[in-house]
Length: 574
Image (cartoon, rainbow, N blue to C red; front, top):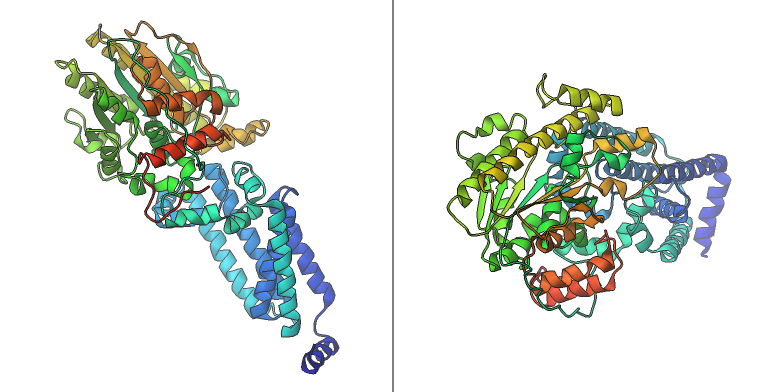
């Protein structure tokens, strides 16, 4: 060490302005705050190492320990707080790959859907900004010579690198659905190449180096190809997942005695319905594409060449989408066209007597599904060609503090829900579900009576749970289950299909639902769908969460065959 540096240190030691006890107290308080927000000691070393590294980095510019530690601790608590808010509304923690979503329409969507939550975030952000300014202006301590700051920074960097190397990003990547380790998860994502790779374009995270040979096509079990109707029920889940009772009419909708039914595992919670649509139609998990999952409809248009509608079109099916959204919503028209749906009808294009303005006041399933079935009946009246119809509802979307079912209707069901779980949001959810069940029972009968001999396979499913289930979980204090927020329902019904076998079925991942529908319809499976069907035993009720090597090799095959086009100059994740 030079004489000049030693002189600076001696002057600093003699100054007496720095109270070591204050600095120690600030460090201990910051670590305690991180420990409380982590809610776990499992990855606490990484969180503390990140806290000290940030403090050492700030110390290089601020020169005093007090402000560096305070600002580092405040930043860590702020990140943990934002991650906790995201977790409560999406069941997933904050990672660096979420940052582009702020520029992809997420913020306006959240303001519209959850104004109270966003107001709280705004208030917290404002408080953080004022507190940071206050610390910078009034919290300065005694300056530390640069001769101390550089070695401290190097030591903090080495400690941070060792903490990350000992834990890695993989364990934290697999704990995204667990309500703990909020700060350490974000920190790990900062150093995880898989997180940053998503910024450059479309990339698969679960893909192997070697391809999987495709299986032979599976022949049809019948000469008759049934119509296939798939209905996505917005934000609908089975209350029995949480141990809550349902009435017979709702039970018949969720688990029809003459149908096949079970729990459906999806990739999302609280919103982003198009990710469930993507998984159903492509047979892939949206989660495989990281942060790109949120806007696959925009980035993925024209890049997926194997899909449920394309497979059906090859069997001479006519394919139709009827959406409860307007044509301008996201990139729906472009994406659905690119995956092989020839006719796309949006809610603002349904013919009279359907009144779009009256419908959009409540998004009633009774109104919308009636128009959907009428449109389908008109198209098949004089046309024996088999049809694929995909209908997207919007009735049960949150928030649930607004009463959409008019007074005097379904009051018995409302009282039943209140007695089962006295929460106004749940009562509104259940009442809307009861209206949907009632409407569907009538429309199913109408469809059966209109064409008594025509075979039809009907698939219902919930795209994700609404945010209110977090409150249900907290109040019921059920044992922790990181996958419970991602469970909805599926039911498959058949009209005039003799080989169909009803009953309780296994839990299913939404990426397999389209394949299972083809199997139940008894129609031929092309080599891609036949291979995907063979993965059911490997993956069970999971797809993205499955560690199946055959699944990863299958993805490699799809890429190698050009059935998935990744973005130019972007290598898939290994």
